[in-house]
Image (cartoon, rainbow, N blue to C red; front, side):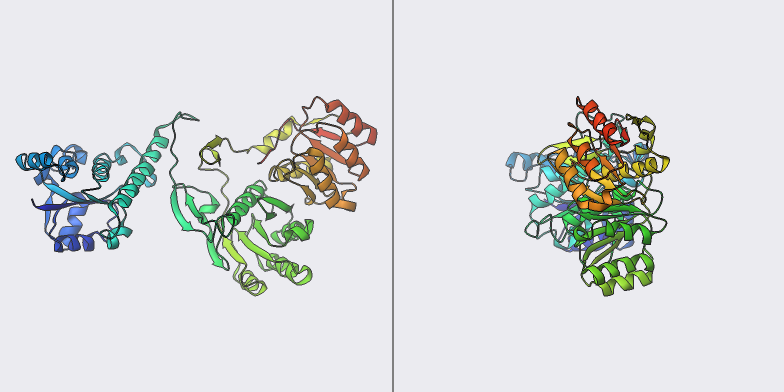
Length: 500
C-alpha cells in the first residue's frame, strides 16, 4: 500500500521543510486549507483532502474538511491485523502513517467557531493507534520526530488535546466549582531547581493569564528556583494590595518586612530595616518601578550590613539602577514583571496536595471589610491608629499562619513578625520580641482570634498601644477585659486572614 502523511496545522512554522523531508522518504502528502496552500507555494506535490474524503471542499464553512470514514479509517486501522489490512484494501482506504496536526490556540479567540472538531479527531485517532501511526503536534518535534518514541509523541498529543479542551470547558462553564475540571497549563521554563537543589522543577502558566509571574523578565544574575517563584508570588500578593509605593522582603514564602512610603526608595528602606537579619538572602518585591535611589537601598544594605539580596522583582527598573545592582552582587537575580493588574484572569486560588487540589476564592476585597470592624473596648483607637491598623491587616494577610505582627506606632511598616506558629501566643511572643523597644506605642495585629487573654496581657507588658484581632472566640470577653484593664483599644475585624 502507498504511504500517506496527513498535514493540517494552525502553526505553520517549519511545515514546508518537514513536508519536503516526508516527501523525500516516499510519503504522499495529504493536506487541507491554509496548510495545503503553504505547501503548494513551496513547490510540494500535495493531494487535497477532498480527493480522499469525497466531501465537497470546505463544506459547511469548513466544518467537514477532514471528518470522514476514509480519513479516520486510514489513521485507525491496525496494520498488524491482517483482517484490518484486507478490509482497508477492499474499501480503498489510504494508509495514513503520519498525522501532523496542531490546533488553533483557543485562548487567542475563544468562541464557537474556533472550536476545532476535525483536528482533535485526527489527533486522537493517530495517538490511539500510536503503534502504527506517528502523530506530531509540536513544530519543535519535526527535526527529531523519527527519533522519538511513538508512545512519547502520542502522550504529547493527548496532553495537547486535554489542554485545548480544558479551555473550551472553561469558556462554556458558568459553574463556580464544576463536578469535573481540568486546568490548562503550558510549560514556560525549566527552573534552576525546585524547593531544594536536589529537586528538579519547571514553571507552567495558564493560557492568557495576566499574572505578573507570567511576565517575569530576566535582566541579570541567577535563574529562578521554585522557592524564588513562591517568594515572588507572595511578595506580589502583598504589595498589590496597596496603591501607594509598597515593598516586601520575602523569606521562605513569608514576609520578613513590609512597608509603604511616599516613594519606592522610602518603602524599601523601611521594609529592609524592619528585620535586616532576616532580610539576608531575601527576595525583594516592589509595586512601583525601581529607580537609582531605591537601588541604593540594596547597595547600602550590602555595604553596611553585609546583607545579600538573592532576587529583586519589580515592575520596571531604570538603566542606572540596574547597573548599580550588577555591581552590588553578581549573582543577584534581577527581574521585571510589568504593571500589577487590578483584576485577575484566574477563577480560583489553587493549592495542591499531592493528588488533591483545593479550589477556592482569592482572599481579596479587604478594603470593603473595614466597614465591618468593631471597637470592643472602652477606649477607642485614634484616626491615626485606625490607619495603621488597616495597613497592618493587609500586611498580616501575607504572613503565614498562625500570624501575629507588630506595626510601628507612626510609620506604615512592620516591626515584628511572628509567622507559621502552631500557637497564637507563640506567634505573639516572636513578634513582640522581634519588635523589642519599638513595640511601645505600636499596634499588634492577629490573623485570627485570641483563644485566651495571654496575648493581650503580653502585649500590654511590651507597651503595645492597640490590638486588632478577628474576634469570635468563646474567650473573647477575657481578652476584652485584659485590654480594658491595660487601657488598650481593641478592634475585632470579624474576618479571619489565614494563609497556609
